[in-house]
Picture 1 (cartoon, helix red, strand yellow):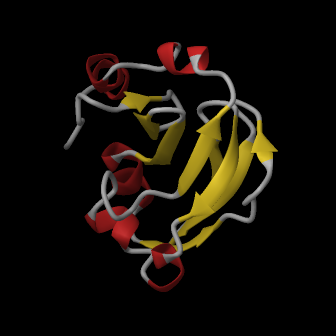
Picture 2 (spheres, rainbow, N blue to C red; picture 1 turned 45 degrees about the vertical axis):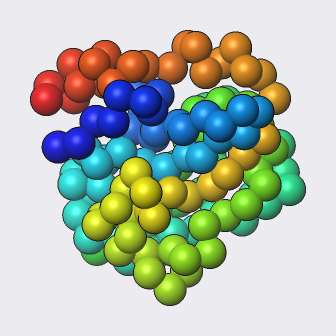
Amino acid sequence: MNFPSELKYTKDHEWVKVEGNEAFIGITDFAQRELGDIVYVDINSVGSEVAKEEVFGTVEAVKTVSDLYMPVTGTVLEINAELNDNPELVNSDPYGKGWMVKVSLSELAEVEELLTAEAYQALVGA
């Protein structure tokens, strides 16, 4: 499994890549393996401010649907449109082309509360 050290992680299996005052968010390699083949990603929150730990969408796999939890408070600037036609990008490239949303961070300090790669690895027993 892959745990990029430059990312931050949540106990709900989302990752965050901070670039200045913005962040890209997706689900972890561990999460996509647990879910299985992703067939649909449903996110309708563009332009909305979503508070930390609120649901911002869902991801549907062959056998289940899981909520996506916002790791930090922010306004959703963009949804990865590629996922509409290619939801399997979440499985094949969860930390790259499989990102889900780009947000404008409201509370930069919340990023420091997230898990490091090492702490996330320990959480999932990897």
